[in-house]
Image (cartoon, rainbow, N blue to C red; front, side):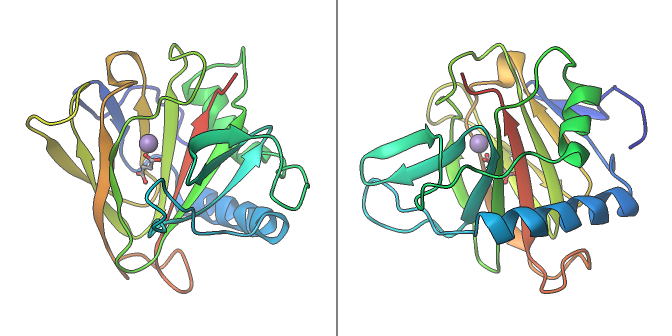
Length: 205
Ligand code: SIN
Ligand code: MN
């Protein structure tokens, strides 16, 4: 990873570090993610309405993010009772470089977007301490990322995120609505079967 610490772009407090991970670093992450997914397979979370999300997910770390008809929360083990796999060094080291060496993230949420998948505007607010930012890593196909406001509604702005980009959502961006309108399926060769992976690193407790 290039050692610069300054974002190329800041939109509404979202710090966007374009083209931060080179192809070798991206491939290393993908290899580590494959091992995680063997131990904690991707699943389609159900939301409050009973509908399934179009994004498939899994987690690594002390906590995994979970959603069902009772709502969203973090859980300490998988449905089969196993712990979540550890967050690999390749991922933690990015947090250490860009965020802090004082505390590591408790959760790495892994989102996989296949063709047609998207994520509605939402806030990340299931964590105990909003002083810690959420760090997001994009891998694979391009995604149209939408940035809103602290409250629902109002004008939004969008930016295309590409493989190797990192977004830091902290300070006044920490509780802003954000989401992914669509991906451009097949735009990247990083994943054999195309699609996009987004990793979000979170301090939870
Ligand atoms: C998220 O907000 O959890 C995911 C954002 C993204 O996929 O870029
Ligand atoms: Mn989010």
